Image 1 (cartoon, rainbow, N blue to C red):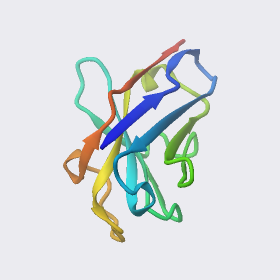
Image 2: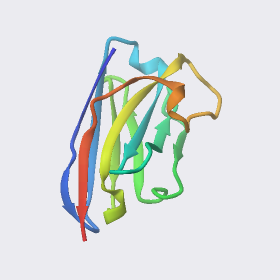
Image 3: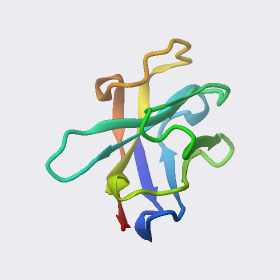
Image 4: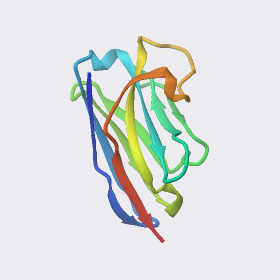
Amino acid sequence: VQLQASGGGLMQAGGSLRLSCVASGRRFSTYAMGWFRQAPGKEREFVAAISWGGSRTFYADSVKDRFTIYRDNVKNTVYLQMNSLKPEDTAVYYCAIRGTEYYSGSSYYTGSEYDYWGQGTQVTVSS
Protein backbone atom coordinates (compact mmCIF):
# COMPACT_ATOMS: atom_id res chain seq x y z
CA VAL A 1 0.00 0.00 0.00
CA GLN A 2 1.29 3.44 -0.92
CA LEU A 3 -0.07 6.83 0.05
CA GLN A 4 1.23 9.91 -1.73
CA ALA A 5 0.38 13.22 -0.11
CA SER A 6 0.77 16.58 -1.83
CA GLY A 7 -0.48 20.14 -1.79
CA GLY A 8 1.40 21.62 1.13
CA GLY A 9 3.20 24.92 0.96
CA LEU A 10 3.64 28.36 2.45
CA MET A 11 0.54 30.42 3.04
CA GLN A 12 -0.33 33.58 4.89
CA ALA A 13 -2.75 33.45 7.79
CA GLY A 14 -6.32 33.50 6.57
CA GLY A 15 -5.48 31.74 3.34
CA SER A 16 -6.46 28.33 2.02
CA LEU A 17 -4.72 25.17 0.90
CA ARG A 18 -5.98 21.83 -0.33
CA LEU A 19 -4.05 18.68 0.46
CA SER A 20 -4.45 15.54 -1.61
CA CYS A 21 -3.52 11.96 -0.86
CA VAL A 22 -3.59 9.30 -3.56
CA ALA A 23 -3.74 5.68 -2.42
CA SER A 24 -2.67 2.57 -4.27
CA GLY A 25 -2.29 -1.09 -3.45
CA ARG A 26 -5.53 -1.50 -1.52
CA ARG A 27 -9.21 -1.29 -2.43
CA PHE A 28 -9.47 2.36 -1.45
CA SER A 29 -13.25 2.63 -1.42
CA THR A 30 -13.67 0.17 1.46
CA TYR A 31 -11.30 1.81 3.96
CA ALA A 32 -11.63 4.89 6.10
CA MET A 33 -8.98 7.58 5.72
CA GLY A 34 -7.49 10.07 8.09
CA TRP A 35 -5.27 13.13 8.24
CA PHE A 36 -2.86 13.77 11.09
CA ARG A 37 -0.26 16.46 11.65
CA GLN A 38 2.91 16.94 13.60
CA ALA A 39 4.38 20.30 14.48
CA PRO A 40 8.04 20.71 15.50
CA GLY A 41 8.59 19.55 19.05
CA LYS A 42 5.04 18.26 19.38
CA GLU A 43 3.39 14.88 19.18
CA ARG A 44 1.41 13.81 16.16
CA GLU A 45 -2.24 14.79 16.45
CA PHE A 46 -5.45 13.84 14.75
CA VAL A 47 -6.88 16.36 12.29
CA ALA A 48 -9.75 14.74 10.38
CA ALA A 49 -11.11 11.42 9.20
CA ILE A 50 -13.73 10.15 6.78
CA SER A 51 -15.59 6.87 6.73
CA TRP A 52 -15.08 4.41 3.89
CA GLY A 53 -18.28 5.46 2.15
CA GLY A 54 -17.71 9.14 2.76
CA SER A 55 -20.95 9.73 4.65
CA ARG A 56 -19.34 10.42 8.04
CA THR A 57 -16.58 12.85 8.86
CA PHE A 58 -14.72 13.57 12.08
CA TYR A 59 -12.65 16.59 13.05
CA ALA A 60 -10.40 17.80 15.78
CA ASP A 61 -11.93 20.71 17.65
CA SER A 62 -9.04 22.92 16.57
CA VAL A 63 -9.94 22.62 12.88
CA LYS A 64 -13.70 22.17 12.98
CA ASP A 65 -15.53 24.66 10.76
CA ARG A 66 -12.28 25.54 8.97
CA PHE A 67 -11.15 22.23 7.44
CA THR A 68 -13.15 19.82 5.30
CA ILE A 69 -12.21 16.25 4.50
CA TYR A 70 -13.72 14.51 1.51
CA ARG A 71 -12.89 11.66 -0.81
CA ASP A 72 -13.19 10.60 -4.42
CA ASN A 73 -13.36 6.83 -4.53
CA VAL A 74 -13.01 6.80 -8.31
CA LYS A 75 -9.70 8.64 -8.12
CA ASN A 76 -8.56 6.81 -4.96
CA THR A 77 -7.93 10.19 -3.41
CA VAL A 78 -8.74 11.84 -0.10
CA TYR A 79 -8.60 15.60 0.24
CA LEU A 80 -8.25 18.05 3.08
CA GLN A 81 -9.52 21.52 2.28
CA MET A 82 -8.02 23.95 4.76
CA ASN A 83 -9.52 27.42 5.03
CA SER A 84 -8.87 30.31 7.39
CA LEU A 85 -5.40 28.99 8.09
CA LYS A 86 -3.67 30.02 11.28
CA PRO A 87 0.02 29.99 12.21
CA GLU A 88 -0.73 27.18 14.66
CA ASP A 89 -1.74 25.00 11.71
CA THR A 90 1.93 24.87 10.70
CA ALA A 91 2.97 21.22 10.68
CA VAL A 92 3.78 18.24 8.52
CA TYR A 93 0.49 16.71 7.46
CA TYR A 94 0.17 12.96 7.01
CA CYS A 95 -2.58 10.94 5.41
CA ALA A 96 -3.27 7.43 6.63
CA ILE A 97 -5.53 4.52 5.75
CA ARG A 98 -7.40 2.73 8.47
CA GLY A 99 -6.62 -0.93 9.02
CA THR A 100 -10.16 -2.36 9.08
CA GLU A 101 -12.16 -2.82 5.90
CA TYR A 102 -15.75 -1.57 5.98
CA TYR A 103 -15.23 -0.08 9.43
CA SER A 104 -18.49 1.33 10.77
CA GLY A 105 -17.57 2.42 14.28
CA SER A 106 -16.55 5.82 15.60
CA SER A 107 -12.93 5.26 16.56
CA TYR A 108 -10.84 7.32 14.18
CA TYR A 109 -8.79 9.51 16.43
CA THR A 110 -5.62 7.60 17.26
CA GLY A 111 -2.76 6.79 14.94
CA SER A 112 -2.59 3.16 15.99
CA GLU A 113 -5.87 2.51 14.19
CA TYR A 114 -4.22 3.24 10.84
CA ASP A 115 -1.81 0.81 9.28
CA TYR A 116 -0.27 2.71 6.36
CA TRP A 117 0.94 6.29 6.22
CA GLY A 118 1.96 8.73 3.55
CA GLN A 119 5.27 10.55 3.55
CA GLY A 120 3.88 13.84 4.78
CA THR A 121 3.55 17.27 3.24
CA GLN A 122 4.73 20.47 4.93
CA VAL A 123 2.22 23.24 5.60
CA THR A 124 3.62 26.54 6.84
CA VAL A 125 1.34 29.43 7.77
CA SER A 126 2.90 32.82 8.33
CA SER A 127 1.33 35.52 10.48
